[in-house]
Amino acid sequence: MTLNRNLTRILAGAATAIGLMALAACGGGGGAAAEGDMAMGAPEGAKVTVVEYASPTCAHCAAWQKNTGPAFEAKYVANNKVRFVMRELPTPPADIATAGVLLARCAGPDKYFAVIHELMANQGEWQSGAITPRASLLKTANAFGFNEQAFSDCITDEKAIAALEKRVQAAQAAGVTGTPYFLVNGTVVQTPGSSEGPSLADLSAAIDAELAK
Image 1 (tube, one colour):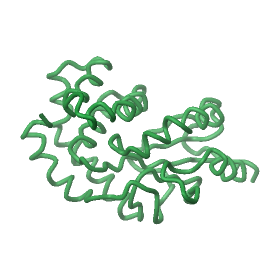
Image 2 (cartoon, rainbow, N blue to C red):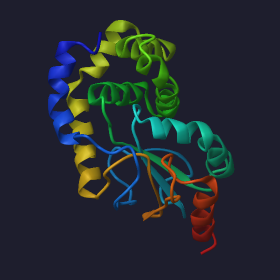
Image 3 (tube, rainbow, N blue to C red):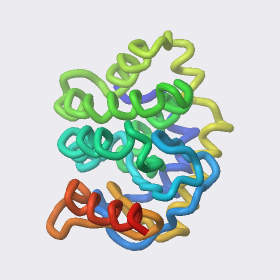
């Protein structure tokens, strides 16, 4: 069982706009503050802003979050050295990714990142067929205080879906073509040969250079 037919119908436009995006960072993109940004760490206007474009269904994003995210957050975010911004760019399966993003948004700014990280950590259970994608999403929703009706209302909110479509279009207009995708003060940071996004060493080199200015 996948998401219900109503959700699939509503998300059809978003899935078309998103397209089949590569699960690797490439191309160019903007790092300036944007409407709808979800952030933690230093406040807006910080000397250094790190932007990550990510998706709840992106396996490479999940790998970065597991292998590099905690050390990055401890070194730069928890102590407010940088402002860390996540921007959603749903990747296939688009309906599952979009529902996950909507759920994280409904949870509110204080729980947004925790929901996204939980969704990434749970990718394997629905990918393996252990449970259905909807059951996995609902399990996460329940863990963050949503009952089934609240979850259904959240992921079928047409206004929220339209807002997400605008953010996706803005990312595409900026030249972002895949996830994970990182910028430090507007400059793309990559680690050659890595599919998981930049290493902590490469991120640190870019961040520390900006902090030193």
